[in-house]
Amino acid sequence: MKAMFCVARGAAGETLELHDVDTPAPGPGEVRVRMHTSGVNPSDVKLRSGVQGPMVADRVVIHNDGAGVIDAVGEGVEPSRVGERVWLYNVNRSADGLGQGVSGTAAELTCVPAALAAPLPDVASFEAGACLGVPAMTAHRAVTWAGPISGKTVLVTGGAGAVGHSAIQIAKAMGARVIATISSQAKDAIARDAGADVVINYRSEDLEARITQEAGRNGVEHVVEVDLAAHVTLYPKILAFDATVGAYASSSDMTPKLPFYPLAFRNICLQPVFVYSMSDKAKGLAIADINALLTSGALTPRIDARFELADAVSAHQAVEGGQLTGNAILTI
Image 1 (cartoon, one colour):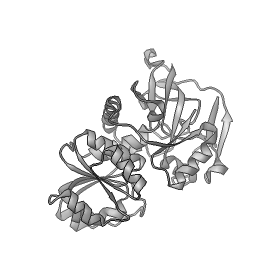
Image 2 (cartoon, helix red, strand yellow):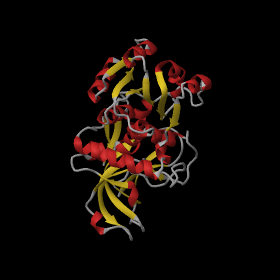
Image 3 (cartoon, rainbow, N blue to C red):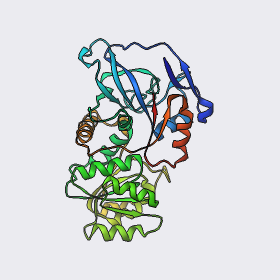
Image 4 (tube, one colour):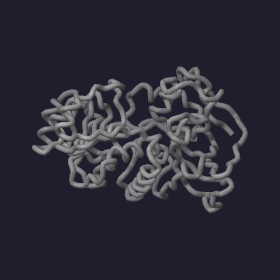
């Protein structure tokens, strides 16, 4: 079978190689999945580049997310799972989510712990299934960690990105009023199509003034945050008392300074979100809600770029370029 390996840290063209390897056999507690798609996430790109640490083996099959069909099971797994359509998550990570694994989804066949293969609803495509493990699960946790949001005003920054787009859909399906920020006219349409009630272009509008106007005197009650450093100083001005924040990135500054007392005076609660180390309970809730939303049609991940397995280098370069509005996937 064919698989795409990372053989070193560095540029995609210098580190990714397609190889023919033996077909793997599932071990105890594992399922083998015939892959149809593999998701290409920013975290996969960062890992390959060396930002998240050195190699853990001479070569590693890349990527964490994907979708396919179970074609074999190991000891201890119900044989009835053979033939099941599944989406995979956290595949190329250690059990605690903090370390690296060696067997990812960018392969014709891959073996994973059975728990990491979630049922893919019949109405959902394999392409959609490749966009769930990191983007949709991150969005779900960032939206829901503080409890129900029905009737609340939720701010989603970066509403046209892969996570932001899913966050808008999840928040709307759960009964929230959503304000989204974007940076261009094209992204405005994407956020509105996802269901955002209000869309604000932070490049051409006064962000604080518009949010204050749209949120009303009570302010925003929950935030799904793509860049904590860029917005945290606004929180005391635009958020309600006891507001909550689910922050999954801080791209403009990885060590942001927090205005502690202004945040404390309003009892604003901040939760950093890292999908790979989410608790089993949080993962279970995310899987259940994501599958229900897929089935109802309320969640439809946006795919911006598709590549063949052999063209993984181009896929990584596209993600690194930062111009995609949605997910990148490999078709296998």
